[in-house]
Length: 476
Ligand code: ADP
Ligand code: GLC
Image (tube, rainbow, N blue to C red; front, side, top):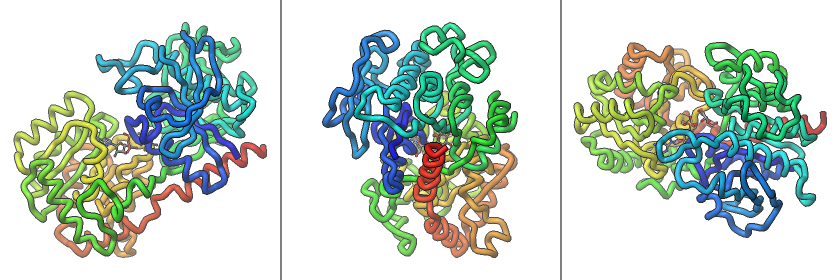
């Protein structure tokens, strides 16, 4: 079984969030299921620099405004087809935004190129490769299923990692796409008179998945569907939720080279060395008391505005906080100001730092994830694996992966963390107080940590579910 995966991010080459972790980890997990994955990815500078053994695969005279070629090679054990199109992708930094922090004005063409190249490759534009299934991730790759449908390509899967980002463009963009006129319709890319990339992918893919069962239900409702819930309800029969796993080699506290002290569920005491280093890095007073952790985009989705307003209450419980994140300026300022009000109690590092994120999971007592919506969420899964107890909003994948420490779950010895709802300041304050109280019972806390570490957060089961989905599509 050959699957072509198309996405705009791929760990460790290009990452702005969890999408990269997923597309980077799935290929090796799927190979255990006899699925050979090739990943098509825009030729950003970091991709072109990492590509090894690159060979010409196909040449375009004109791919959305200039000549381009597809190169097939490898990087970090991944089989890659890079879209070497300097006019579209030879730009440093964030893959979507220019230096001004705004979307590149030609994003419609840049990501139409990704969808088109993916469908071409999957459909056998080079006779040496043809995919059984084309698997596209998020709006940037969502024209893949559209091209595959209207230009006779293979079966396709569309995975939604976040329905908030849809890739909507004015109707004039349709003329650039080279699709037959009938694709500008309700069962194609037309979306309230405009062009919707994700809408098109959802309308045309043979199967739709999203990254947790709860989010699969949520996006069928007006509250979470962001305008696409009607279409998703109509296509519910092909929609399912498959929860993300994590790369258990990259995230393994027993072998992690990025942390001072490695440990496992029977040597949890060793975490204290990581806690000391973490406190020093974040300029927090050392101590054995509760130390909360946050690793997050500082955005509305993540509930970080409400969280920022709860920081005085957090300190009032006697706890401390190490926060690593970057995002909206107002939230960055709010958390920074809280760290000024509470020196030694709240440590904030504004920035993106993969290495520090490992130290945080290995040294903090909790990982706080107060998201308003969360398709899957990965930081709580890393937390489970690292004995860093997740404290999460009851939504999306957070709901599916953390078992709340309520009386019944504690009694049954199945609790792995804390859940709360709704996401508002009063509930958050209450949850922080509840967490602090539980932390005083170290036996209870150790139980949460150990059970979390025993959870299977690997890709095993989910990779098997994707493989089964591919097989069903090919059979149908
Ligand atoms: P999302 O993709 O919505 O941001 P996820 O929880 O799925 O949320 O994935 C976020 C990923 O990005 C995780 O791997 C997390 O560790 C990482 N991450 C987020 N912010 C930072 C940061 N400031 N520094 C390092 N890693 C970060
Ligand atoms: C998106 C979602 C996040 C999910 C990730 C990977 O970024 O916001 O919840 O974990 O994709 O699927």
